[in-house]
Image 1 (cartoon, rainbow, N blue to C red):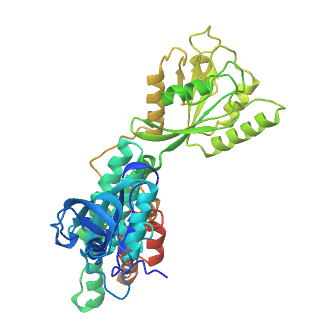
Image 2: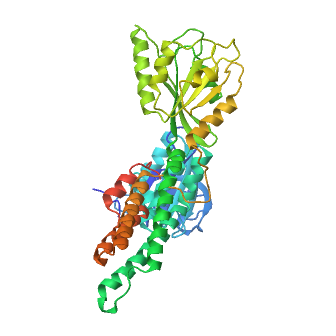
Length: 478
């Protein structure tokens, strides 16, 4: 079994997406990276990679020589006929100023599956092993270049779908959240030290419940609560929201989907029931990643396929964060409309009256009787009227009046949120105990728990099981 915490061996992986491309990258990290490069790289200037200056790129070829048998293969010596694998650019980066704080060699090959596979196979034959998922980043964590919260931000950076989600991920990667957590942890350690002193030296009659101590406990609670409150915003940027377009057939749902996507993704015809399955696409709306779903029209039908489409529509609605209810403004509300209104009754929603370019049969005033404080927007998909108003209404609904503040640390990870909530509860218990004048020993237990839980956010005393669960989400080459 591979010891993922062992940094004595050298790992290798393809670090670029699998498939055809102009350039592909094979990455090596570990103590043998430069020696392996010496064995497989033939430089045009005749120098070995182990002699290259750090962070320099060199032109040459990756070559394979026949097995030399009992004779050792001398690096840089090509007495046996080499077989050229690929024409490459090779970069040497010397420890500790690298991503992993180890020696790293990156080989820029042609980006075909065969070329990349052959170069990786050769690295393995010459002494490396295939990296586990996320093992390069795991080594960066083990070697102290980044903490665990920053390591988790790496995958968020890779997966970011909007400028907003990238900004939040980069903020965490640069250590903004870690700095906040570490400062809070140090503050609580300071409180705990005072409490421990009162336990260890009772003869000194130290005042445990000083005004200053109570003030620091209160400050810690406020800061922890601020981080918890930021998590809703962070989760929106990290995971996006699920917005489901719903309504009866021929209300203009698919046309609206295409308009919001700014391309013809869904088939649109005048025939009711054209959409029979859910169509899902990601859009960037004012920096918010939104999974937009066009669903089959909900109506009475005997058609088996249409029934299945409606079943899926209702499933999506159940899971949605936001419902975009489309009503046909050129027809009176009927029983089907009222059934759908009831279906989304408890959902966060924007009510959209479409087809205002036709003779109006209903208005926002008519519809308002069925809703409380929901946004009701009158639009014309055909004439592209009020689409900007609709987009703003969706954004306002998502934020619910909150304003994104890029100047403060944001929690965007469910693991972090759960641990910070535990620390908040610990400090809440500390405050109650101090208010009641409880024994110092009881206060000390919760303070230690708060310190421990915050430490887990940044990777202090974290178990291998947690590390494995985090890094297995990564791709092999990162």
